Each structure stands twice: as structure tokens, then as C-alpha cells.
Length: 154
Image (spheres, rainbow, N blue to C red):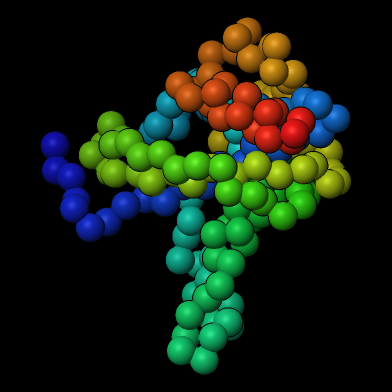
């Protein structure tokens, strides 16, 4: 298996909370990573997330590309609007096709919209922390949700 030492896929996830519940989605069975598992909304950072917009500095750089990409992914995947995403943690893994992945996990409040899934997901649920063990979640997602629950409680 070839693993590039310089290139990574950058994935972004959003733990969205509303009234003490958290949104989880079930990945379709044809996904490259974690097919059929429950997770939280998110997706990859694409160069189009910034190169198709005007740079935010005179030097040709773009601020807030990650936040903008995460908002785009949330809108595409579940059709929701959220408040400003807050950084939670990062994680890395090697996909089955050899691509190294860096995941940046964020949490945010639900603002508006009704859940409407795209083709990447086949089901969704708003769950309480006590319900997490009832779902076949990607390893670590339940712990991340519990961490967010503690942060928003305090």
C-alpha cells in the first residue's frame, strides 16, 4: 500500500446539537470509509471551497476556508444552518485505499432548516447521549459527542 508523505485528504465533521440532542447520520453502504456506520455530518475540504472566491488577503490567501467548507457540507448533507463552528479535536487515519486522512472535528448549534439527506446518507436521528450505544457509530464518535455534551453543559 502506497502512502503519500505529503498529501492528505482533509475531512471536516460537525457535531450539531439542538435542545439536548445530537444529529447523527447513517453512511451509505458504498462509502470508501466506514460504509453503513452511523456518524455526524461532514465531508472533505475541496480547493473549490476557496479558489472560486476572492482571496481575503492581498497576498492571495483565504481565511475561513475550513469553516466555509464545513457549512457547505452541512448544507449539502443535511440541509441545515448552524451557528459558528467551534473546534473540538483532530484525528488521523489511513483509508482502505491508502489515502491518509486528517479529520478536523467541530461542534455547533442548530440554527434552522429541516433535515433532508443527500445520497451520502441513508438515515438520520436526533439522539440524546444516553441513546448513543444503540447505534453502530464509527469508533470515537460517541466519545466526541459526549465531550461536546460536557462542554455545552458547563
